[in-house]
Image (cartoon, rainbow, N blue to C red):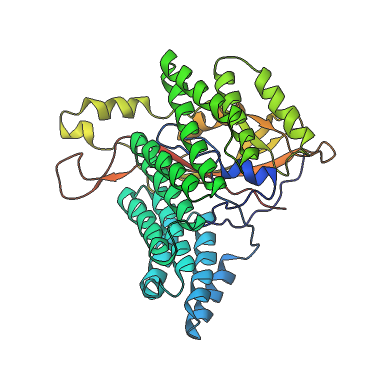
Length: 406
């Protein structure tokens, strides 16, 4: 039995901004699309801290006791909140961040990047808690702080605008998301920031791909393929390397139609480019969640139909699995969990269907990966007509990669 690596913490705040390695380039530029599919590779980078929960708690307390400056306070806050999140203490993590915001938001002009990072962390935790309004507002606040402190052509602001578009998609507004991605692409081209233009373009292409995979309509499939092929044939000047990400989208489209040649070509191309430090997902069947709940939601009608019948509080699992040197998944299992796990069957089905571009050879041991899945539902106020928010009857599964660096 292969030994399992230790894992400790994750970064809730990072967004990829460079293409220093091919792996970073690819993972930075395929959109997370939870509104249409619960799976995907996103823009969240992993940082293993190897610090205990008590250590980060003590560090934050010591920082506050000595009245540390805002940037140090925020760094200590995020380190501790990340540990709390990994331990499954989502609400404690949220409280930790909100307390820090109450202390430090007034310093947003002196420390715009740090405060925006704090808001980004807040949005991520809120999303996993199903707190849709808090998630939306935190993302907008994050963007607005950068907007007030940086020029409109600054890559940091343009990247934040992409996160706003991502949030619209996550909240179930794909049309708004596409319009915003297109607007960001135009601005980035105007301001000569080609990598941001490519990021925005690839996100819209990813969305068109997922729409086609979901509807299976000839029109949607043709539209997605034409847009992807146009990007590959006419790459954005200064961001030509981003075409590899579009080729991956094309391979996903082909796999959905039972065609595997383009997947094999992608794996070969990545290998000739030196390979990846970490396996990269090329294809997976979507996670099929809750058609019964979705049907109940569509029925409308009486109040009981519209109330959630599931308990979504404190339900999460950490799933570990190996990716072998052929890019296939082996030995997927639950490492840790909170609450009932009967909702994980479609998650395992999706994981086992995956095809990866394998990482560089490591003597045939494969690559071990760990992912956190949270079973949640949005807090909404329209289901009963009450002023008190209720859980939507439509479940959602949120994913974040917590694979250790070591």
